[in-house]
Length: 222
Length: 208
Figure (tube, chains in turn red, blue):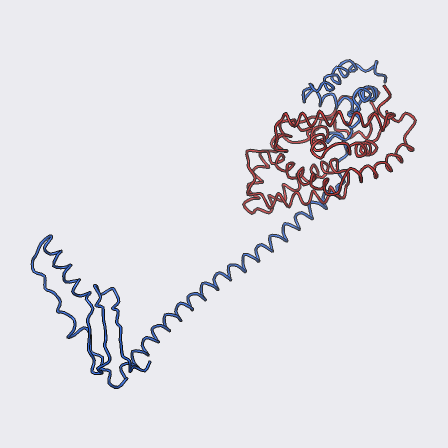
């Protein structure tokens, strides 16, 4: 169980005058993996309601993950749909030894990598993000770095993520945004934990340099 | 609120240092991000040290959930697609089942027709041969066949030998002369009643 503040913060700088204490919400209920294994087994046996339940439970998370990974809402919707259809097609191959979400993210991640490769993400993302970030900067408040909104941060990420390989990008998103641990990321990618750590290390290094070079105002000049 | 005023400032700096060294534990990292999400001064200082902490607001724990409309649209499209595929696969299964049954029935009909045809041809040929003038078919089992051996109360090896000899005699080809001087019937007598007899008719005048 992962406990986080219940309030969705749209910026970094909006600190409460007095720490009100964090209201905590659970991102995933403790019993979810076991329940989802059962649902997956029932769905594999042809239970349409069980599959619908899995889709209802997991669509928000998968859609958000793909939106962050692909940087495009339309692509995210397409890949999310394809992910669940692929899940339905392969339910009989699901190994309950794995959490259903791990298997789901593996399928979604692989499809997203295919999508990133197919569209030549680097050039396109860079061109789009440059335009958007430029707009965001003009509307930023005087104390910009302290008042970054989620949309602005997303555009900065889209602009800078072009320096990452597809695998580095996937690892970074899974770790930084989806809060997955190295062990689970290794399962999702089908590789060793050391490989995951290496991808993450390289991704962070490349992004730090890129952000400092492109958006010095957003991170402060040191 | 300044960084100095934040009671967590020192601890936050320490966590950022661990993160830069890539040695921060997952729980500590979650704690760090949770604090940066609500403490502007600490967040600004942390971003200066590690610019990737700029992306904290994008974390699933902090970012806004996808629009409910988009979520429901994806779910509906997925379920519609699955229902469509289920209908298609059921229809294909139905067609293939019919096809298999149809083929089975067709195979049975073909087999039946083939057997009837063979028997019919055989019957017609036999009938035609019997009606052919000058060709008199003698019953091969009467005069030509040897009398059935009578086995005495032999025992063991002797009985087996006698039975074998009798069977060999039965298997010998019998030649039946017909009234037509050029026609001959050759029959290889069956060893047992379950086996078919093989008969050759050699008649240069036969009209087949």
